[in-house]
Amino acid sequence: MSFSIRQASITDIPALNQLVQLSIRQLGGNYYNPQQVKSSLKYLFGIDTRVVEDGTYYVVECEETTVACGGWSRRMTPFGGDQASNLQDSGLRNPAVDAAVIRAFFVHPDWARRGIGKQLLDYCEAQALKEGFAWFELTATLSGYPLYTRYGYQDVEKIDIKLVDGTQLGGVKMEKRPLTTVLS
Image (cartoon, rainbow, N blue to C red; front, side):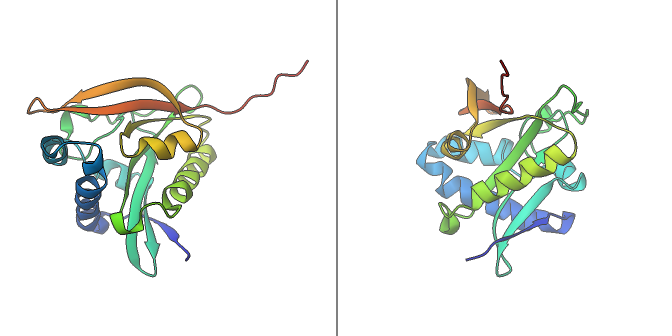
């Protein structure tokens, strides 16, 4: 089965937000309680329009069916959709010193565990490298954590994200730095 990756457009956002809802309810529901799922969808998880406008958010399709989405960002915002305005920072990162941020990976539950996340992660990393970034950071959901760990991301710290209604949502700040060779 072959998957294609294309740049997301503004017109994709409503359908992608539906995918986010489904992914968090079904896949995230294995890691978060019902209140955490409900609150996170209301106050945190969704598509960040700025990342779509920047051209760094992507749609994964299989035979014209949207099966996943995700991207990377040169912006300071670490995570969160449009509804998480308290987290938004449109400032730009400096590729010479800052990491590119891997952002908002969501897979349709029927398509989970088929290598789509890895394919999209490789694609996003390659695009960020082309723009001069040398390393990556992200905030992993508990459901996304195994993917990132499997592909070279290291824990920086476990965090609890306090949502607007007081609900706490666990996550892990992670990073992936380039391999370096020490010459003797």
